[in-house]
Length: 379
Image (tube, rainbow, N blue to C red; front, side, top):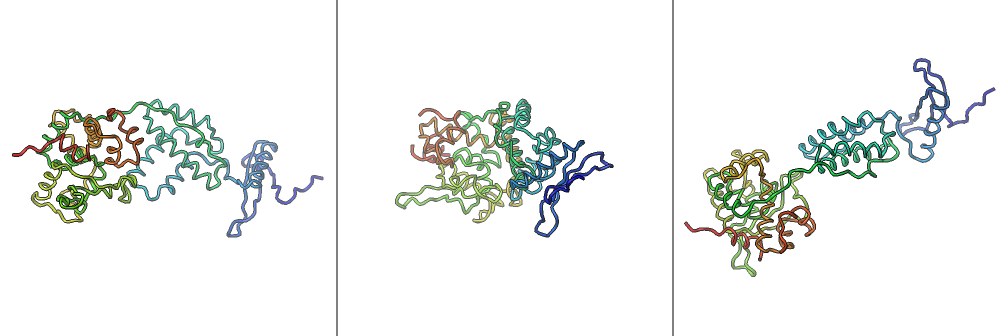
């Protein structure tokens, strides 16, 4: 007579409809008093028992996981549905596109518990042939977060993605900076553009494009305090951006920048233009309805000015005015430490890493240096 299994050892029976042996384990009760049951199947008793033992072992170790049919696709979709709260809509859209195209499309059918580090390495190596290094790293990060999300919910015991290192992808478009002659031509061409003040301020202060689009008149001091000790020059306060939540990129990015006289002149003209709203809470650079300028519209207007300056408009973007700011100051002899503070970096290492092509081996503050580079011509 076959001995009855002890309580907690699970059960084993033949399922005629599925033509498989079914192993069942009862793992106690949940917070609502509902019985927690896990099932495993196999074509033979041995296979079903082996899966049953794995379930019981996981339960004893405190690492009970979901059924083995849970796939990478399900893990990614669960994370996209519940793990992106507080993100900007554009970020969510970008993450979804990359996840669906590069992760789900390639690894989606793979059972999560069967995913190995070799699978992840092969996947990243194949993708690196067609996308940039930045995209490869983002793909790895998204999959890593999706698996971590699944692991926290007992869908899988460990995260093999976390032990894999993303390879280098295709070389992207290198950032570049304007020469002094090109920058001078751009400033001259900007005189006839509605984007004049934006371009002058971006090029001569190094503020990020998302910082300028969020700048308000209350953040602008056109007069300074010449009688103070020490005297305070005209300046702008960078305290917000158009990023989600309105915060600057980092805490160090919150800074006050002295303005060259050319910036003061164009901002005064900008404030006095017909129909301008220069109330403290109003945006300095706004649409006709007073709302924030869209990044695509800024890019399109900037490229018109670039073309008028004799540049290949398709090769330049607004963010490269910030690179040009670093390059021009470096060429003028300003120490790297000063440049780092002006662009809002926490240290020189970031400045060197991001702008290494613009920096030169070896004045005062940025406003004074820019006044020397771009003197105001009377009349």
